[in-house]
Amino acid sequence: LSKPEDAPVQTLFDLTGKVVAITGGGRGIGLAVATAYAEAGAKIALLYRTTTTAPKTAKELSSRYQTEAHAYKADVTAPEEISAAIDQIVQDFGRLDVILANAGICSEHAAEDYTPEEFQEIMNVNVNGAFYTAQAASRIFKKQGFGNVVFTASVSATLVNTPQRQVAYNASKAAVLQLAKSLAVEWVDFCRVNCVSPGYTQTQIMEYASKDMLSKWLGQIPARRFASPYELKGAYLFCASDASSYMTGSNLVIDGGFTLP
Ligand code: NDP
Image (cartoon, rainbow, N blue to C red; front, side, top):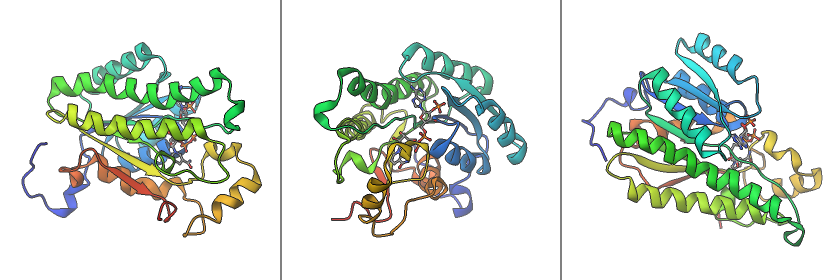
């Protein structure tokens, strides 16, 4: 891990001149975090698949925060697509400092009802997609001699909530956590690798949940409310900045107390 000189506190979270690429950057948590990174001075690459408003959003970020921001279309399950998008980002911005592998999907079924296709789709986006994204960025990081990988895992990586009908999602997020730890060790010479694990956060991904399920989950959260995606900004900013320069292989849990024993 690089060892920066003792820096003033005000500059620890400064991302001026840094280039950050974010999968799932067009909406939800990815977009909230992109906003924080732009405000901290970073140049932004928003990666999206179906959120076609992403190019317009990038322009808005650019003018609001006086930074450079562009959008790139890539499906994280297609390694050649994500790799080509990362290469294009480096060509456009001249470097890549941080990759946030954040794209993810969820579904809800009784375990015995999962079709192989449904189970594979969750694994393909959440695990394979996260790996392909980090792997594409790592090739750049290795050449540069620096870089930073942040994964979005979940409280579901370590906790089994009730009622339980999310076996695929939980298994996929546990895999993301182990991916991060393994890569943190393997890539220690040229980048840091960490996870943020949000608890229930109000985004589109929660729309599949029934009212009954939402109220049951709410009852299990000490904070007695779901998070706004904007309440995750601090954790992601910490991971992406020099404020966390000695942190690698860690998992920051932001969950209103949900995973407390
Ligand atoms: P959203 O549904 O709003 O966002 C999901 C994002 O994933 C979208 O931007 C979508 O891009 C992207 N995505 C999905 N599939 C693909 C794909 N094949 N290729 C590229 N991008 C893809 O939900 P969130 O913002 O909440 O989710 C972001 C991450 O946070 C996910 O990994 C999720 O598991 C995780 N998380 C969410 C929690 C919550 O309660 N909200 C709790 C814990 C973790 P597009 O729209 O362009 O298709």
